[in-house]
Image (cartoon, rainbow, N blue to C red; front, side):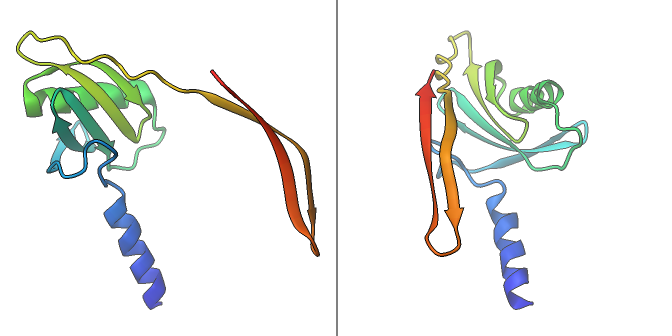
Length: 132
């Protein structure tokens, strides 16, 4: 039972941990229309992590609420947003300055073939991946 409690505590602590580039930035909590967010801002970029459960978690409405939360927190206009309904990164335009360029999305598609599994020998598979 003690291990289950520790695991639950660990998962709860890690759910709004800062991503790369935002570690060490103090988090700010905001709630907009029932959606709760943890916001971290560094330079003219914001990382927004949704901490409230939502179903269905659709990107467009959640991103709109996250953009409002960032605007209320920073006074800067989010010019672009990328990510998914759980974690987003935004480029901010502050005091008329342009927002930083949106990071290029890397897409990787992999096809698995030649897979097998044996109780005695374990398993193996071959993959062919393409980056777009």
